[in-house]
Image (cartoon, rainbow, N blue to C red; front, side, top):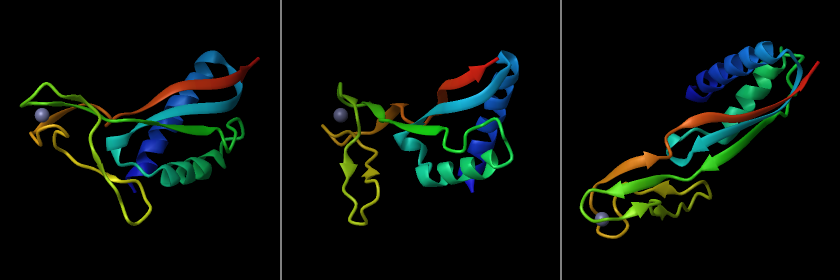
Length: 125
Ligand SMILES: [Zn+2]
């Protein structure tokens, strides 16, 4: 599961930050997940919960996931902005369509693939 390896590396980052700042408790971790990273938020939460079990200094429900919308630029026209999203009948997140919403031309992704820790709220000594 890809999400598990992502969350493991986030955990490593959080732990090294804790050491640097001599934190006694991690309260919140704000994780920005790009719309085009195709990471399942549920799987991220699940993986986090499982890893946090063995980390007494990290709150089990510390992970806050923020969705970062995708932004693309068209190679044909001047369009820059979000992708059009195809509605999903399954009730899940819609599938972004990788073409320009204006002229259906090819697009370059400017943002939306990343998965980054924005902020860690912790209690220090
Ligand atoms: Zn276009």
